[in-house]
Amino acid sequence: MTKLTGGLAVVKSLSAEGIDVAFGIPGLHNIAIYDALYDHPQIRHITTRHEQGAAYMADGYARASGKPGVCITTGPGAYNTITAMAEAYASSSPVINIATQIPTALVGRDKGILHEGKDQLGLFRAVTGWNKRVESIKDISPTIHEAFRRIKTQRPRPIELEFPIDVLDGWDDVEILSAESYERALGDPVKVAEAADCLAKSKKPVIWAGGGVISAGASAELVRLAELLQAPVLTSGMGKTVMSSDHPLYLGTLGRSWGRYDSQLSKSLLSKLLEESDVMLAVGTRFSATHTIYWTLPFPDQLIQIDIDETQFGKNYRCEVGIVGDAKAVLEQLLQQLGQGSERPSRAAEVSAVEEAIYQRAKQRAPEEIQMLEDIRAVAGSSAIVSIDGNIASYWAGMFLKVFEPRTEMALWGFAGLGFAFPAGIGAKVACPDKPVIVLVGDGGFQFTSQELATAVQFGINVVVIIFNDNSYGMIKSMQQRWFNGRYIAVDLRNPDFIKFAESFGAAATEVSSLLEVKDALEKALSLDTSSIIVVPIPLRSNIDDTKAASPMQPRPKLNS
Image (cartoon, rainbow, N blue to C red):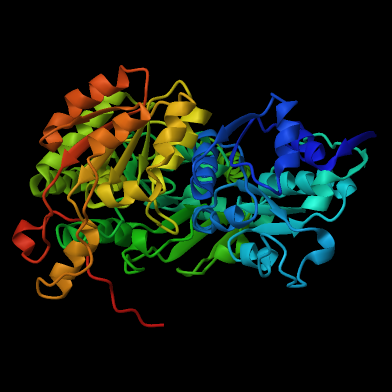
C-alpha cells in the first residue's frame, strides 16, 4: 500500500484501468484530481468549454474506440452533463462521469453549502446503469475497478461515481487494483443448440443486427454467420456499421421510417422480404420504434434473440428463443454448432433488388442530398468517421451514407438531443487521430455546443464540420407546416456569421452555395492542419405537398398501449 491523496488515488486507479485521456473542467471541488493529473501525464486531459461537451466527447471517444470514455465534472458542472449522460444511456455507450460532492458529513442536510444540490446521486441514477458515492479513500480503487468490471461484463451503460471533497483532499494508505480481463458470457448450451437447429432447418433466414454487435466486437462472426446462412442483414442505426455497405447481404437501416417520400415503398419491399423469411436471428437490438416503423414491420413466426440484457427478450416482438450472453461468444457458439453446413443458394440478387429500389427512389426524391453523401465518402475514404446530428440533411446520412468499417458512423438514435455530433466528433478524433472525422450538423444544433470549436483548435483536434444552414430549426418548422396547415412558430433563427465565428477561434471556414459544392470544399478542408467548418445554405423543403417532399420526417403515429 502507498499513502495517497484521494485525488491521486482516482487518477492512479483510472490509469491502472487503461484510461489515457479524460475530458473535463477543473473546479473548486475537484482540484485535488487536477493536481494529481499534473504529476501524472499518462492521462491526457482535454479542457472543454462546457461540461455537456465534455460528456459528449467522452461518448464519441467511447463509440469510436470501443473503450470507456471519461469526463471529470464538479458541482453544478456535473448537472450540466445530464443530457449527454441520458444520450449515453439510451445508446448503450460506456461513459464514466467522475463527479464531486460536498463534504460527506453535509450531504443531504440542506445547510446551504456552496455547490450543494438535492440528491445528486438520485438524479444521476435516472441516467446511468450504475452509480455510487465513494465515502472513503480506501474505497476509491475498488469502486473504480467495479465500474470497469460492469462495463466489460454487462450491457455498456454510463456510470457516475461521486467523490466528496473531503475524500479527495484526504490522505490514506491505498492499494491500486490492476485492470482485469473477463471471460465473455457464453449462452446456455441447450438454447444455443435449439437456435442452431432452427437456423439449420430454415429456408430463408434473416438477421437483424444492433449496437450490441458493435459493443461486443462481433462483426466478423456476424458476417460469417450471415454468409453461412445466406441471410440478409438488416440493422438498427446503432448497428449500421456491423458490416460493409458493399457486402452482398447487407440491407442496413432500411427499416427506418422515412416519411411519406418512400415509406410505402420501403415498407412494402421489407414486408415482402420479412414475410417470406421463416426465421429471424436478432443480435444485440431492442427493435426500436424508429427502425421497425413503429413495430408495424411483420416479423417471421420464429424469432431468436441474442442479448447481454435479458430484459430485451420479447419486449417489442414475441421471442421464441432468447439467449443471454455476449454477442461475440454466442455467435461463435452458433458457428461451432452449425459447422460448415450445406451450401445454400445465394440471396445476393434478392438483397440487391430491395436495396437498389429504395436507394434509387431516394436519389429521385433528393438527388443533391444523395450525391453529397456519395461525394463525402469518396473524398474522405472508407475509414473516415462521420458524426451526425439531428437535422434534415443529416438524417439522409443516417440511412444512405455508405459505411465500410465498424465504429465509423455516430448518430442520434437514442435520446436524440441536439448538440451531440460536434463534441462527439471531437472525442472520436481524439480516439482515432489518424482517421478523418466529419461532423454533419444543422445551424441550430451546432449552436448548442459550438463553443467547443475553441477546444478543438486549442488542442489541435482537427475535425471538419459541415453546417447545413436554413436559419431555422428546420425539421420542426417542416413538421409544423405539414401538420398545422402551413403555420409555424418559434423556429426561425438569427444566426451569427459562421465564417467570422470560426475564424475568431483560429479555425478555417468557407461557405459554398449548394450541396454539390461540398465535395471540393471538403477535399480542401481535409488537407488543412486545423479544424474547419463548411457552411452550406439550404432551403427548407416543406412536406405539405407530398409531390415535392424531400424531408425524411413523417407524422407521429397514433399508438395503442
